[in-house]
Each structure stands twice: as structure tokens, then as C-alpha cells.
Image 1 (cartoon, rainbow, N blue to C red):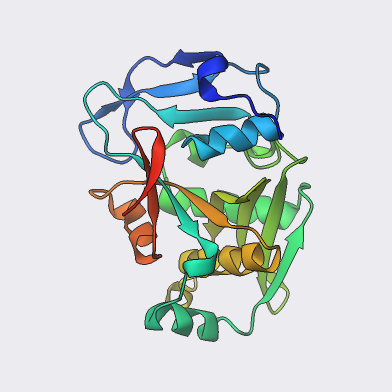
Image 2: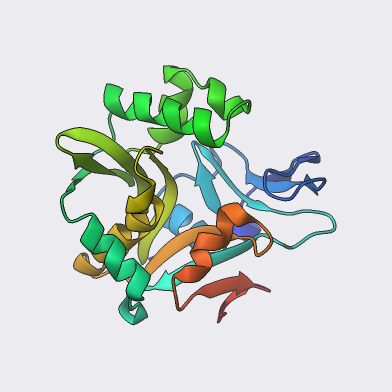
Length: 236
């Protein structure tokens, strides 16, 4: 399989902007020029080099004085759930899980708006209309899927997942805040691991882990983790 390596693609470096995860910090991102590299083998290569996708933007942090954002991935074959994660699966045994082709679902959008109001109230994402939602969640139908969880017919969680050559990339998850004991964020990762295992895939790419960010702390509970550092993956 031929791949376009990041060194041969065209990128730009953003101007500094407020960091979403570390207070008082300024962030910058290395972003692929839109339209330069299509999805497919080239996108697979970028994911393997620590990049992420947000809508139609492919990027990775490139901050001037900070390297707190660490791309991480989970080796599917080696993962064993701990006691808390096994209990999470058991608590949610009454949920219906489906994997869908990406398309607009009004229930999904309504849940997304509620999630943004609770988790990111006052931010730009809290103002997303249906077109902004489509641009963010439904931008790459060729490689993405939606995993949906329903309780008694009602959607309570949705995960956006990209399928790459050697695994799955967990792009974004949103869920109801009305069921805190269920641990829906943890469940979403566990179900993606299970689905990757069923598909015979090797990795679940979990995006960026930031040790000092409470929003990212959950990723450290999935082990073993590998981190992308100095141009390669190493075991944390």
C-alpha cells in the first residue's frame, strides 16, 4: 500500500489561540492544507503519525513551548478490561448498540446540542447549528461510521469513528448527562475496542492524552497505551 508521508504533504501552522485544555496556555496546530491529501491510504499514514481529524481538518498540536498533547493508541489484542470497566459493560447490558453509515439523524443532533450545552457551554461548539453539526460529524462518510446506543428506543450516546487501514480512530463521542452511573464515555471506548476486535483490527487511536487535563484523564485507564513521540510509537 502506497502512502503519502507527512513530510511530503503541505501543511500550515496556525496562529496562537487559547488552549482548550490547559488554562492560561496558548496553543498552535499543524494543519493539512484542505484538499491536498484525500482520505484513504494518505489519511491512514497521517493517523499513524499522530494526526487527528476534526470535520474536514486534519491536524496535530505544534505548540511553541509545550508538548503536553500526546497522541495515544491502544493495542487491541493486549487490552484486558479492569474491574471497573467490566462493571461498566454489565451496567449497560440493557442498551441497544448499532453501527451506522453516517447520515443526519435529528435525534443525534438534538443530543449533540444538549451535550455541548453541558460540556462546552458558552463555547463556539455550543452554538453549532445543523449545518455546523453536519460539517463536523458527517464530513467523511467514506471512512467513518456512527456507533449509537439506545435505551428503550431513545438515543443516549453516539460515537463518530474513522476506519483506517490498521485500526479505528475514535474521532468524537457525545452522550446524555442524565445517566452518570452508566459511564457512557467509558462504555463508548469499550465498545469501539470490541468492534475493532471483531473486525480483526490492531489499534484503537484515542487522540491526544494530556496528563494535566481532567478532560483527558480517562484515556490513561485504558491499558496498555502507546504514545507517539519523536517520530515513533513507544509503550507508556
